[in-house]
Amino acid sequence: MTILLIRASPETKQQLEVLRELHDNMNEYEIDFWLTPTAIGHKADMMIREEKEEWLKSRLTAEGIPFIISINDVQQ
Image (cartoon, rainbow, N blue to C red; front, side):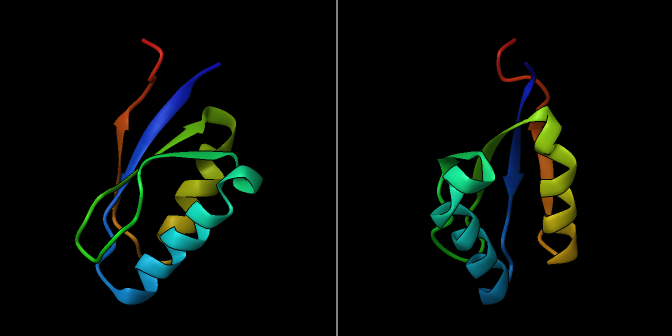
């Protein structure tokens, strides 16, 4: 099973709220936060299984939240 690390950087209050909602419901979304979303401009690191990658990337893109794939396979 491949697990990725996605780093998101909220630039607005609304983007921060989206990340906080993902954090508050991380069990439902199957996301594991390494760095929690605390403030605008602060990074949020999320581990996610490869099969959920497209869903999360689409959600972040739809909300205009900048992100990068920080680690392609955390287990390596």
